Length: 410
Image (cartoon, rainbow, N blue to C red):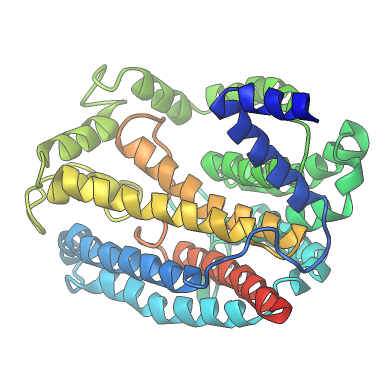
């Protein structure tokens, strides 16, 4: 025993820390009780609410600045887009509140119906003859119009995470096997991603399996299987990129943002100009020059670029800090989850927000190829806004369950 203790103490500090993290993950994955391994302090739900409130407020302020001129050019009031987004905020908070009070464990029973309804909605969008409810807009069919406009690919992020978490719990003992473990997941992931790719929406078709794979990896799937999957997927993804000229142009623009500033690299070139023009303190709210027709989609895909221009490095760091804090808080809630499903659900919902934010920022800073990913809670789009609030509601539900189990024990 003395030898073992001395051996452990003689290991490097990073090795002991890694062993502790792995042991905590194993203990979470191996239990099915309602007693959390890690006890939350009780302030986590309030902190999450404050973070979301800050992000929504900052988003509405910058969205107004980004969209006012565009709205006026379309013959609309300057506040048109900001007001539409604002009207979705109370609905989002209400939805998050309802989900927070509900028992997240009920989602396990509805995982299959949810994923089935999602696949059906995605198929309806791309089916011939459904153009009346799913018209082509800007060369793509991504919306269902039934009185209100719904983007099923956004809701697919939630349902795919829930389904993956539920099935990972059920197949916990078989996740080490490719045929009995990973393969069934791949079939459903493909069934969700294929109609999204046909819309076409390549970025969402890649993001959906990525979010699901992160959940499955947290559940204990072997990393070797994901490496093998990546080796198979990369050539297929490259083929899809080459098959569409605009995707290939985006890759060229990513590799050399200054190659053709008036052509293929126009968007990313203008985005870098916007961020660079902000300097340390920014040009001030409303002071953006890029919104005068230079950089398209400022209110959506490139909102972070405008934050850099008007808020400067200080504003960029502030927004980045908000999302980092959200990630740390979300993983803290996951660590305190009462059971494996709650742990995986919290990890998945946290990744949904954080990964999307990092992808959006990466595109704005030319660290990633240009693609359409919203900045959660901030970019224009009520479907994306409601999805972000749903993720928060599920995180709060897991946190409340953890706190209730601790109160019961005491």
